[in-house]
Amino acid sequence: MSGLPSHPIKVLVVGSGGREHALCWKLAQSPLVQQVFCAPGNGGTAKEYKTKNINIDIFDFSKLAAFCKDEQIDFTVVGPETILAEGIVDYFKTKQLKIFGPTKAAARLEWSKSYAKEFMGRHNLPTAKFQICHNQIEAEQALKVMPWAEVIKADGLASGKGVYVCNGQTEAKQAIKEIFQDKKFGKSGETVVLEEKLNGEEISLFLLSDGKSFLPMAASQDNKRRFDNDKGPNTGGMGAISPPTVYAKYESIIEKTIIEPLLTALKKEGIDYQGVLYVGLLLDQNIETKSVQPKIIEFNSRFGDPEIEVVLPRLKSDLFPVLWACSEGKLNEIMLEWQDQVCCCVVAVNKDYPTANSDSQPITIANNGSSSKEEITIFHAGTKLIDDQLKTAGGRILVVTALDADLTSAATRIYDYLPNISFKDIDYRRDIVKSESKIPSRK
Image 1 (tube, rainbow, N blue to C red):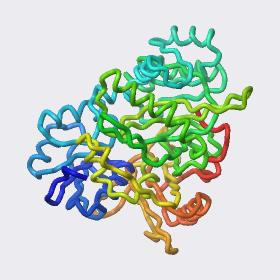
Image 2 (image 1 turned 90 degrees about the vertical axis):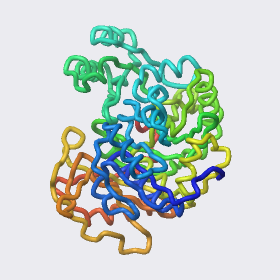
Image 3 (image 1 turned 180 degrees about the vertical axis):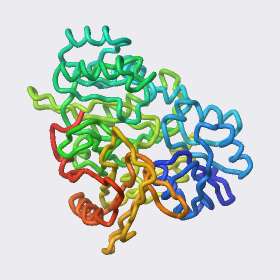
């Protein structure tokens, strides 16, 4: 690609989760990249090839920018949505620092679900029926006349936990109470979106964007529910696969009915979106007509986690020029090459996740690698190093990933490997690949 720096490149990745570890891991493989820094990073990035952790708070934009100036960082890649919503990209641009990610205004597609739904409504983008409510009384009254409203969403950011998929009005009323009365999500729950519950397979799609065009990455599928058989509360993600077996059948329909109209809609509203736009889709099944229509569930303004942990291992192309092209308006010069192998990951969590986290419990990885020739890759989601001892630091702790010829083989190797990992109260789902073939499945 034209316009790349001619000198060895230094990159800063901002964040501390599995997504950021995966980004560091892939960027460090680039022959163009000399050094990757991660702020603040985790126990995995501390040991990653060509990568060094930097102890700077991600919300301290001035210190991050000063570090970039002092260290002559060529490019910053933003991981979490929280700092995009706080305007880190806007701040870095005022300091003439190159950064990957959308502005605060563009990232509103994620940090306000009501705004995103109204945006979809204005442009006739296919999505579930919805109603926006600003208080508990209004929401409860809406339920009485909208029996289809069984999905309750807190408007703001909630780390993937602000969505309730309910069975009937009793559960829906309880969700509304927890959001408004119990203030479970604080300011993020000052508004709610009531939605129609759809039935079908979910698909996660990352659209790289330079403000002029989209470049889709390989599709993936997240498993959000905490327990086997898609039971329990929504989480940040318990495992993922790439690609979903159902995606190829509907790829052209998704292109025509969602991707192309979405790009047109952004341009019509004057949204100069640079970065990655995550589109959460659901293949909605109409039981009466036996037809399937892809619909948008949500937007995210960053890479999904743990989806990116199964997408990047399949990417044969160098990641750095791809992200650089987004900031340069040169995505038309980029082509992506993908592995024929599929990828699966399973997330090892604290047993009380998502209601509680684990902190400072020792982690043991008895065999840090697979005994077979095929590689097991472990991305760290909630870990830290204390005196060179790996310890827990979150709810989702480790993301165990494998490439293989088919999903069943990849999953089998992961589940065979997981007994090598131990920490207090470790748990994980046992059905990540089994659940991907179900219709209906998740909301």
